[in-house]
Image 1: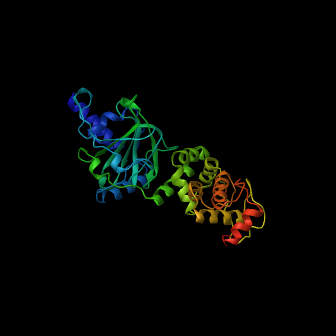
Image 2 (image 1 turned 30 degrees about the vertical axis):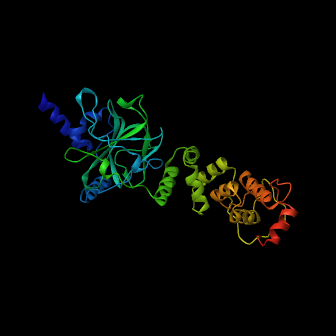
Image 3 (image 1 turned 120 degrees about the vertical axis):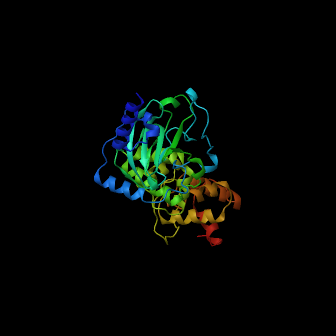
Length: 333
C-alpha cells in the first residue's frame, strides 16, 4: 500500500512540480506538462541561489512586523503547521515575491484554492486558502516579482476562519518561510504591479476601484508626486476624492473667477498657492490629492480655510475678486 502511494506521489511530482511532502494538497489540480519556455525558466531559476529574504507576498496592507511565526503550531489529527499564515483582508492581492513559474493550480480539502510556483534555487512556494485566482492564471505562466497570483480568502479547511494566506516553502521537505519574510515592496514596485494588474483584469475599472478604495492614501500620494498612473486608477481616484486629475499646463493667469467644476492651469496655480500656505487640515488634504487643475470639494474646503485664516468674509470657498486681490497683494499668484 505505501509503495503504491509513493509511486503515485512521485508521478504527480514529475507531472506538476508539486513536492511529495505536500502531494495530498493536489486534489483537483490543474497541473500539466510545462511549456518549453516555462521549462527553460524553471531551469534558470533552479540554477540561482535561494532567496535570502523576500517581501510579504501581499501587495498592500501587511508589513513583516505584522506577520507572526505560526510554524509548528498544532493542527488537527496530530499534524503541525508547515508554513506561515498571513492574515489580511478578504480579497487582498497575493503577488509573486520573486520571479517564478506557476507549476500547479487546483483545489484541495486542506489548502482549498492553491497555487504552486517554482522560485530561485528550485524552491517551491505554496499559496493556499485563496478566495480565487488572477484572471487567466494558468500552469506555465512565467511570473515577475509583483505579478498577481490571486486573492486572500478562507477556502479549504480554513473556511470560517479569518481570511489569510497560507505560505509554504518546499525544497527537500518543508521549510519555514517566516525568518526570510523581512522585506516590503517599494512604492515603485507596487505601482508597477498595479499597472500589470489593471492590464490583465477582465474588468479593469472594477479592479481599480477596489485598489483605490483599499489604498486611497497610497494613490493620493502617488498622484501628488506626479506618478504616471493607469487611466482606470486615475478615474477611480477622482471618484473617491472628488478631485479630477487634469494635468494642467503651467503659466496661466488667475484672472477669472473659480468655483466648483472649474479646471485648467489657473486652478492648478491656485491649488499650489493654497498648499504652500498650509493653513490647516483642508490644505493638507489638498496637498495629498495634488495640484490637479480641477476645482472640486477638496479645493473648495482648502480655499475656505485660507479665506477664514486671512479674514476674508464670507469664507465660502469661492475664488472671486476679493480673494484674487488679497492673494495678488501677498504675491501668492
